[in-house]
Every structure is written in structure tokens, then in C-alpha cells.
Image 1 (cartoon, one colour):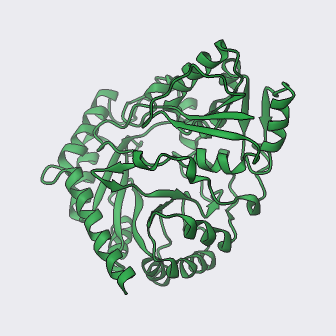
Image 2 (cartoon, rainbow, N blue to C red):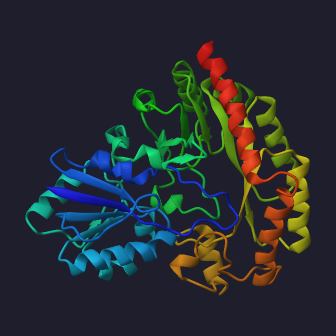
Image 3 (tube, one colour):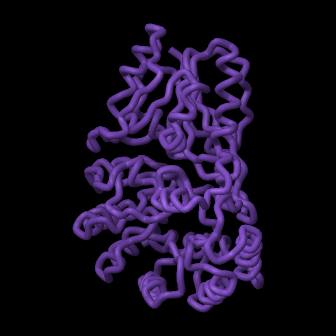
Length: 403
């Protein structure tokens, strides 16, 4: 049985240096598919997509809301040819009700342990309209090594530098951050994978550069320490979302190969200043992920925030506009206040204003987005700062491997 797995194209963030990471959802989905399924994968962001074939099933792996218009176009093209279409992924989980008329089936939830039943339904020509596992997460021990062999490795480079491979050590998140949908998608319970399974997967990845895509590694101190100790012998270099602000944990993270972290920055507090300094004190670089347009922000406040980012000597920063994604706490708040201006999927790329800010006009917020990029990178472009970050990582990696 032949399935075609497609990762739809989307418009990238305005002002960001263009690059493509190998997608994570498709390789995790592929690992959950039965062995008798022959799987062809196309990442339409880096490969040509032709919709004139007739596989037994087309599977759309849709991570971002902004991918949905292209996903629907692909679905329509295949359904016109009589090919059934199954859609899944984060964006489908967030918007499954409105998507159901446009595909043959939606898959909601985690795929591990569930795809054999889907394959049997495809064989019988009895694909269900909905496979709903949202409220029953997969047994975490079933999460195996992702099937990265489906990727075209040549496609994921930037200036001849191989991009990091994505991997996850846990699912779920005990936090409930205002812009995030994870509480709806993966639950508020932290579910760590067995560390030996994580080590097995990391060791199997040829690339020595990794990105742990867990929402936060700062979920359980003992688990963090055990994970980092287990990673030390592998001599990989990796990036992640926040690590616990604990000297012992940070020291182990550095020994384990932590290269830099993504740290959300919303304000100019001493807490953020201290956290950035402690990362740096432990040899860990910091890329700030800066959301503009919270209710605390006005034009002058954003200008002070950018001055603060320069003052604390961040290694890199990425600026986005607050975006009220479906099922996030901020979406519920803004919807209740009648402040949602736009529900067009293609505008949910985090560089367009789709809500009414509290202390600015939408036009002023968009102007401050440009101001943030221009001011932070006035003396050194994002490309040069990225290059500096990569060079430091390569030097350290040579020392670690050589040692």
C-alpha cells in the first residue's frame, strides 16, 4: 500500500533570514506507520510537489496555521482525482472542525499505536471521517526513533552549513503560557520519554547538531539532570527552549553540549536580565524570542525593550507580533474582549497584526515590528550574528570531539 506524506508550503516570517529546518511532525508520523506502508515524503518548502499521481492515501502533515491554505489546495487537487486525503498535525488539531468538509479524514492526537487501524480502514475503503485521540495521549513508551531517512538531506542547509535535526525528549507541558496552545494539544501533564530511548534516538542521528523541540526542558530537575548526564558521552551540540535556572543543571547542560537556548523575553525585568547572565556565565548562548504587542506594550515600551535587549548582549533575537492562535489562553481573552480583527489562516505568520492592541493602533504595532528588527540588527545583520553563533559552536565541537 502506497501513501504520500506531504508537508505544505507556507510564507516565511518577514525580516527573518530564510532557512529551512527538517520538519519534525512528518518523521514522527512516519515512524508510527505500519511496515507494509510504502511512504513517499515531499516537503513542499524545499521540493517540487506534483499532484498528478494516485497513491492509496495522501497524508497532510500540517504544523502551522499558515500552512492550511496550501494544505486545502493540495487536498482539493487529490480529491478531484479520487484519492482520499487524511490531514493531521498541530494546525489540524487546532482547526479540525472547520477543516472536516475539505478532507476525507482528520486525525486528532498522537499517532503512536494508532496507524495500523487507519491503514486497515484504508485497505477496506472505509476511512473514518475523524480519528479523535486528543483526550487520550499515546503511551509515551511507544514513542520511538523518528524516521529521518524519508528526508532529502541536501535540502536542509544554509550557506553549505547543515541545519540541526529536530528531536524531542518529552511531551506535554505543566506550564500554561499565554500565547501557547500546548495545554490543548498535548495536555498540562509533563510526559518524559524514557531516557534510554532518547539516548538511543540521539545516538542514531548522524548530524552532530540537534534541536530539542520540547516546549521547555525546565519541567523536572531530577529528570533534567539525568537527561544531560546521559547525553554527555554522545558529544552532540544542541539547542533547546528554556533550561532550569539552576547552576548545577546549567553546568550539566553545557557539558552535555548545550549550544544556545531560546528564551522568551516580554519585558525588561531583573528576572530576565539575571537569567540571560546565568546562561552566559555557564557558556550557553541565548537567542531571545520576543513577542511584541502584549497589553503591557506601547510604542515607548517597545523601544525601551529593544534598548534592554542590546544592553544585555543577547547573541541573537527573533521578533514576532503577538498572534492569538486557536485554543491559546490569549485567544480566549482577546476573543472575549472583541479584539480579534482577522481569522485568515494565511495571516497567522506572526508578522501581521490580526488583533487590536490595547495601547497602540494595529498600524503602530506593525511599525514597531520593523523598528525592532532594524534597531537590534543595525550594526550587525542577523546573518552575521548567526554566523558568529555557528562559528563558536564549531570551535567548541572540535574541542569536545578532539578531547
